[in-house]
Image 1 (spheres, rainbow over the protein chains, first blue to last red):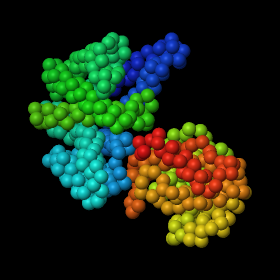
Image 2 (image 1 turned 45 degrees about the horizontal axis):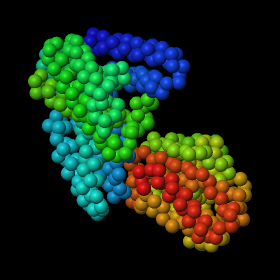
Image 3 (image 1 turned 180 degrees about the vertical axis):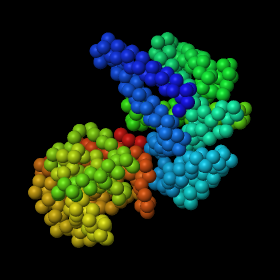
Image 4 (image 1 turned 30 degrees about the horizontal axis):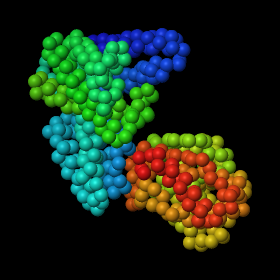
Length: 309
Length: 206
């Protein structure tokens, strides 16, 4: 366990303690009658759980971390496909998505087989799922069903797997402290979400995207996004970057995360749902927490891979 | 049923819950003594319904299932007789005689789970009901029949699927229907069928 890892652990611990104290104070003031405050406290409690799981996994090493992410991919894919109007004829395409695409994608990471990892889903799963769909003999909205399944796999498996993908990169002059960089990524993505929520609640006036995501505001996006970007710069000691580079990389994470979140909100609404699921109290489902990871992780992964390996 | 079989049953149901969720979108808890009737699309349906019931009620509920399916093979027979406490019904016999085991179980105080379509259907909405449900109520006008709709199970494990997909299934339970207004067979079965379809209407399936 490196010094950097200990300090980020303490940082997160401190943040959670502060959040819990504020949550408790708000709870006392509202006497438990405010839905917003109750939801906030449910979210904070769930954050404790998520932080413990993530830190536990990262402490136990990259294999355990990969397994935790594989599980998160599976849960996200399950929520996504539960809401997706597939038909009984889609059994085999879905079987391939759950029982072949997920284990294989993470196994390839574990084997550090970058070449196949990066093309396995867009080339082989794309083909296999489409072949299985065609062979199922049901042409009723065939194209929509096939496209929806492939989109779900791209988002929940391909996108999410690039976050722990950071662990297997050989980063120049970073001395194998990749787990700190993975933490940097996850922390900025999630902090950006949290700060956008906080800024939105405190200062939100102008709706950002009323049709897609009524709760998002310009004030939230800019205030939360910029704060997360600057905090990213300040966290440069746990990255291979300097202050300004870390700030630029954090900005990439924040922008891709916010846009990705918007895309998935639009998908969710087109499927007629408000939350992806109900497995994480206060937050919704796994997909509600991973939505901003899915689009920003692959870009972050490739930025790091291109410039620092 | 003794504790050893109950333990096996609850372990099996925990596995089912882990794979398909089987959460209840309960509109109201079913009455203590009732016949739950549901749409039928997969071999897991019985387990999903049992998993959705509170433990207390589960211990007082017996699924009704086809003897020809559950007597085929030692594992199925063990599951049906020991673990699930199934009331076996002879599908081929037909007529009122086939219902005798159900009536005996009801009169002993058991609740039942039945699939009135009589077979698995590969579609979100149930097919026509067979008449058994009506005959059960003829001598029991006060018997509460609880409609249930299993959402998504037709996608989870369609005919011929070797293993369930981990999609989330919700169990919708509705207001009980009773045959206490002297309806004829067709009118009553149509009403019971409509009660299951109405539960489906609240979901994405319809």
